[in-house]
Amino acid sequence: MSDSCVELVTFDQLLRRYPQLEQHRIAPTGGAFCRAERLKGGGAAGTYAMPRPMAPTGDKHFFGFYLTDRRLLRLEMCGCFSALAEEGGFLRGLAGDLESQTPAQALAELFARLLQEDMPTLQKYEKRLTALEEALMQDQAQDLDKKLFRIRRELSVFAAYYEQLDDLFAALSDETEESDAHASRLFDRLTGRAQRLLSATELEKEYALQLREMHQTQLDMRQNQIMKILTIVTTVFLPLSLIAGWYGMNFVNMPELTTQHGYLAVCIISVVCIIVELVIFKWKKWL
Image (cartoon, rainbow, N blue to C red):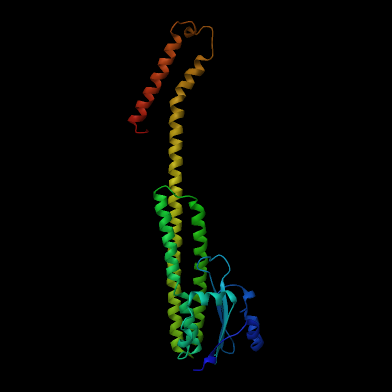
């Protein structure tokens, strides 16, 4: 197969050659998401938008593709995606692999290489969540809610990404089912991989949710403990408040006002009330 079967061009060059593709929104302005659309005359056109591994909520790596019914592939990578290809090395050796492959198979190979680091990326999220769990168990978690919210937000981006890939690979599998059975099987495998990655992402999101619920449970337990202490203190001083209010009325006929040891008697009664209450609380295991 000649090297011209796969060609890198700009979006403007692609649209000049195939103006009918403008309606299929394969340019970056059409939205940074993954999609594939079967064309009436045969072939498929679409876009591929991959979240950045270290900053998935930011700008995405993006490229468009055009696979004709004559099995001619046109690829265009924007600047950020080309930089990723050079730095990440996922296209290393791809040119040699294309010599014995059809354009559809080459596209499947490219997608496979783009997904090869996704599972390690998800494992990094699991390590981050495990570290947060250990900090939570040791009561050393700082700003846990903010960290969990950021992780869940990033995982939601990956979940949406894999859902889009599922549809994209399914569309390409249907398109190549008759013209290139091997490529169709490759896209079917990619569909299964996207579904497994989606399942792993959902598990990580559930893990983050469980950590948030655990953290909330700890906060509730602390609040309940504080309320318990305040309730005990209020209960202990309630009889004292009654005694203070009772003898603070200063009626003339109150014998304690003129008794020599009246003040001492009130103090002793107050102390006895506190001791009795503490004994009762201890017996009821409220302390």
